[in-house]
Structures are given as structure tokens and as C-alpha cells.
Image 1: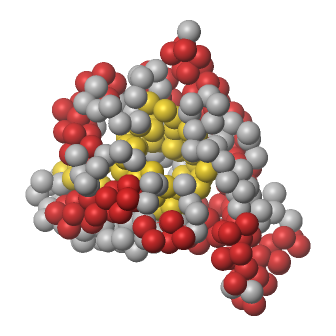
Image 2: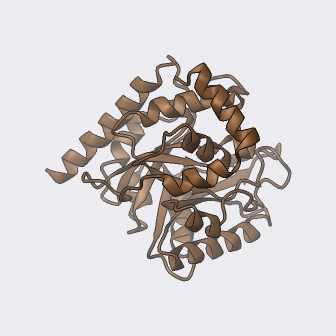
Amino acid sequence: MITHSQWRELLHTRAFEPSAIAAAYAARRRRPLLGPSGTLFLVAADHPARGALGAGGDPTAMADRRSLLDRLLIALDDPAVDGVLGTPDVIEELLLLHGLHDKVVIGSMNRGGLAGADWEIDDRFTAYSTESIVDYRLDGGKMLLRLVNSDSGTAPTLHACAEAVSALATAGVMAMVEPLPYERDAQGFLRLQDDASSLARAVTIASGIGRTSAHTWLKLPAPADPEAVLGATTLPSLVLGGPDADMSLWNNTLRHPVVRGLVVGRTLLYPKDGDVAAAVADAAALLRSAREEISA
């Protein structure tokens, strides 16, 4: 838990010592992307920058920054958690709280497609840039690529993601692409298309963007038919977990050979029983069991 003095120090640094952030980036102890187990388990906290604040039945749960940081530090304290995915504000606060030494840090890049906005699919790059990811010595950049056939906002987002994949690859840095197929319902609301054919199509599109796929990873929902979806790529892939993630689906998907780990946010940070440490431990145990089975 963040103590009162740590919180006061963080607020003081924010106001009076902005240069401390650049120093914290420079001082972070780094580690290899993949550890000895060959897996990657990340906690995601880039939701607030897109205005997606709901968790655990509370529509504004993630708006409480101190609570969010507390939960992230609890998760990061588990040695099975390799690192974090977040926007600059969250990453920098964790750096100032000394929570990211020897952890993988992935910078979230496009957060401009605000949740519920008319332009949501035109997902502009408003957070980390390729240049800042390289300059700040981060371990990768993540981009969201929502594919909607009926929405022209898909085209500029697709182009921007392709440019980012190319630029990150040139710098030798991982590009994590999250391709998600959506369609609008009769009321105009976006609905994820989680059937195997839609997800497999999204995988093939994301796999082919950019000048090279040498440093591309995929971030995907756990499909009901892992072979039909994950069989569409050879790229290393990570399983995402939404607010209502089904761990039984994780269990099956984590056993597919292209899957290297998990990227989970609200499911672990805001579990129904409130026990973040236990939720993280359960997810880590699933991943460990899956890798042991593959290696056997």
C-alpha cells in the first residue's frame, strides 16, 4: 500500500520536480523481455486514458488514481508478474514510486478513440510515440487496432498502426498489436465479434501490417476455438482479459504454442472479492501450468 508520506512525496514531485520523471526513466533497471520460463505476464492499466473507467460494477472505479496505483503495486510485487502496460502518466507514477525496477514496461500508444465517442474507431496516437518509447528505454509499444467494416475511422487507425509497427521494428523494439473485430448493432453501439472467423481475419490483418513483422507481437482475446484463431499466425501472442474474462478460456488458449503469456487489467486489479494478490496468483498459476504442460 502507498503510505501517506509516499503519496505526499509523489504529489510534491509532480508539482515541484518534473525533471525527476526523466531521471526515473533513465535509472530504471531493465531486464530481458522474456524470462527463463519463456513467458510474459503483464498487468494492463491503460484504460483511463481512453475514458474507460468502469470495473467491478463501479463505472468510475479506475478514476481513483491512488487506488489504481495501490492495486498495480500489489500486482507488481508478485515475482510472477513480469511487468506493466500503461500510458505515460501511470508509468511515470509507478517509476516515481520505485515500482518498475527489473520489470518489463510496455508503453500504450493510441488512446484517442475515446470510449463511447462518435469517432471512437478513429483511434489517434495520443500517448507514447515511437520516439519516446525508444528515448525512455521502454521495452515495447502497444497499439489497439479495432476493425469495423462500416466505419471509415478504421482506415487511418490501420495506417497509423502500420507506421508505428515499422518504426518500432527499425528501433528493434517490440510492437504489441491488439486487433479486435467489431460491428455496430442496430442502436449504433460497438459489439466485439468474438467468433472464430472474425478473430482469425483480424489476426491475419494485424500480422501483415508494417514493413516487417520481425518485432510484432499480438494481444488477443481468448477464443472459444483456439486452433482456428491462433493457427492463423506464427507471431508470439499474449492473451488479454476483459472485465468479465473467463479463466476457463484462458486455460485452453494458454496451451497453444504461439501463446507466450497474459496481459490482464481490470480482471486482476478489481476482482469481485477485492483480493488483488490472490487474483494475480491464480492467473500466474494458470500460466505456469500451461507452460509446464507444453514443455512436458
